[in-house]
Length: 269
Image (cartoon, rainbow, N blue to C red; front, side, top):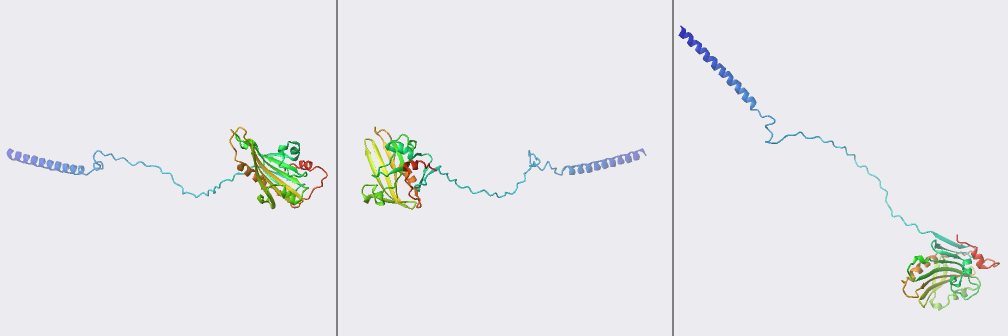
């Protein structure tokens, strides 16, 4: 009896052991299958670190707005200040730069003979105004004087007016200055280190002989000074000559006093 009971007990224990082993195997299988699923970490390459992308703030770009830029133009240089000389009595005027020196009829008549233009050969000649280029315009040169003079003579005829230029009449040239025909001639003088170039103009209008003279004088006695270009100086003076205007309505003033004194009373405007 005991033998059968022992056999039965052993059989139950065996079955229990078998059942425990089967259950253990099942649990192990389930555990293995769950561990076999690839994780997010196992998908990344070996040694690679996956970092979350940093979010960068991007400023909003406003659309470009067209701007009207004014067109730039080169500024024109303002011309130098000019002074106008005008004689109402004799109906004549001209313009000269303010840097030049102006000498009135009174100063000329009271000065030395070097301020007077070339004589026209008649007693009635008198000078209304003289303008000189300062020596500072041509430093360290043989420049001595550059000047322009305006003279009148009311005691001569038209033929005598043209004859005041002297020389060969065939060499006379004509220049129309603001509606008035002038005859003119250029002469050169030199000697003992000095030189002079003169241009004399003459025009007859309103019963008066209008005489213009522009001249360039140089002095280089020792021959050491740098020579100035006379043509360059003459171009400056010619700029004044071209501004001379003679009024067609001017009348011959009464000769109650000296013309020089009357001219001296007319300051430049």
